[in-house]
Image 1 (tube, rainbow, N blue to C red):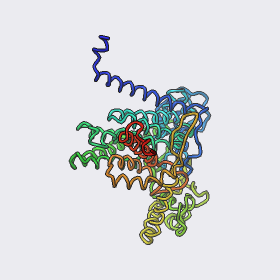
Image 2: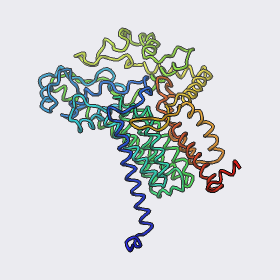
Image 3: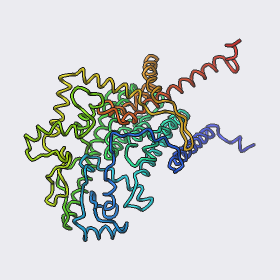
Image 4: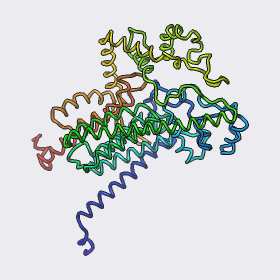
Length: 507
């Protein structure tokens, strides 16, 4: 009895909270590990078919792992997964070496190959590594970070529900656990951003005065890293800006300065990553040349091209100006003008030209690398929009309808079972829900509903077909808010009428 008398109620509450945190984090990890099992039942119907993501990145990991050379790959058979084998190929097979294949690195996102390190550390396999472990650990960590953030601000049970809904997203589960690609990084990044910025959603969450600066710097560093894997997550910077701008309890100069810190950190981090990758390339090229191979000396891009996908993307609804989601259609359009500027350009085969960037003819010139190509594409798009803005607005309206209607199913899932609602119904319901939240001035819920909408920028501005709307998560937050409102209504009714008081309504 004396032992219990000495216990401090505040210490008991603190111990209980810590126990809930530990149990919650352990449950998230165990729950997500279940999806990695071969017997897990994951819906594979939610997928992206409009983008390739990974190309031949895996081939370039062998020399990166063993010798730190990147990008370098070989056409020779790899007889052993060892450093000695990598050195042997360098010395005995220099003519088999190459630094790029197809459009693996000519389209940017050069950091994707580094994701294979996680699997290589686990299985010690540098010949056939997988990006799935990196994707899986990043997603699980993001969910744990979100739960921790919610726990820290006193949203423990709400945070648990939100984690369960986001962690059950069928598209995210498919691209994280089943598909060998990098499509999971958009939603993973959004969840990490939400974990970072959740303490800034409301003044009542009592974030310390230094926290906006820490959040801004952390956001910038994270984005500078992730944009090397996939370009779409960069849109989530808009979600971070929304939170900084709506910190009404902070002066405008603080809000603006926080955004500036975030953008500067992104810029500095991006410059640092490009510099690092460029140094890796120069060292690899010097090594290939020194042993007698052919180094790549063509154009090097570190960010994905913009105007070509915009041109092709207009084909999702255009029936007037000849746009189509086909590279070949864009190449055909520019061919006459390019032939006048470059008589030696050909169209068969349409992508690979008879010209090469090296004397050994290892690296052919691609059609889109012809000087003037991207200018022609940009002029066509901008010109058609200026001449016929109603046509473009009509396409944007149809894209909005598709974004609202073609959302992924939303609900709860385990490795054995899942319970989903039609995403389209929830997506359409988010419009009146947003109006209701605005009218009732529930600003925290408004920010929650809008926070992930930047993930819909790509289907809105680039292309909305081919599963591109699967990235959208606003409807997940919409269902989360609807459940919270429903719970509040039930709790308020229970408090108003008292235990059993509801029966008086039917008396």
